[in-house]
Length: 349
Ligand SMILES: Cc1cc2nc3c(=O)[nH]c(=O)nc-3n(C[C@H](O)[C@H](O)[C@H](O)COP(=O)(O)OP(=O)(O)OC[C@H]3O[C@@H](n4cnc5c(N)ncnc54)[C@H](O)[C@@H]3O)c2cc1C
Image (tube, rainbow, N blue to C red; front, side):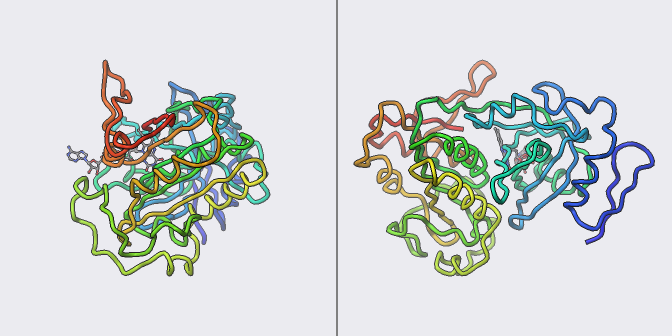
């Protein structure tokens, strides 16, 4: 696919044949003045959109590289070790910014060069009528995008060894951050329960635990109901069985790579897929089953994380609150408040 990328500064029009080539070529151009800071928590730094990989009809992975070719700052290297973190992306015309959660770097063989490690990959869903997400989805490769960060949303305590992660939609991005951080902790274990409205977000995703009812017709109700209007198209006749025969979606492939990567040192990364249009919903029993295991655990080593749209978080753990201009956890509510959590801690992202 041929395309034209205009690189910052007058007179640079570069024609490339492939997106990977464009990513490599712009790195060797002289950095524009002021582009040295790779990422700063308060000031915006210039990045270039070097790749956009479609995930579904509404979401894509955006790969951004620092315009001056800088590698990741120490703050980002530290964040990858133990944090759920985000960056803010600016919409320059309106001068507003929104938070997005970088995906871990996943390459064959696990090798990531210093330059590529500085790239930032974001899974962004285009919200209907959403200012920043719509703006980003309209950008072409080679466009400039300004970022600042990292913002630490949650630091995984050192003694955490077991995580149950309830993810809704793009809430899978922080789950993947946690999976890569826990993958460095010997003997750790993680369960991701990922709910989507549509199968197109997780094509080919197969549950690790097949004993759970996972075909169309499973009883239960969806947290989505009541939080979204009924503007969705009618459900298609899909099931996990025919999902298995489809080519795997990008995020499914990356989850499988994370599983593979964590296999050597940990007790595993386990993923369950739930798809609203297939009538498979995360049920309280799916959580309970993973809370109460025979395996011994150190006190304070187990954590439940919830990430997704506000309605998803509220359904499982109650609302987050605003206090003195800051968003705080608020009391534990929702379905989790009715369960015997033993010594599992809960954190709403
Ligand atoms: C820490 C954090 C991490 C995040 N990570 C990600 C991520 O990795 N990927 C991702 O896709 N998102 C992520 N988000 C969400 C993201 O920050 C944005 O909220 C999202 O992209 C929508 O922003 P927007 O500007 O496009 O939409 P907005 O313009 O903010 O609108 C949001 C929705 O509200 C509707 N709306 C706007 N104004 C009104 C109104 N007055 N009345 C009724 N409805 C209205 C819009 O139509 C739209 O559907 C994250 C959020 C946080 C806080």
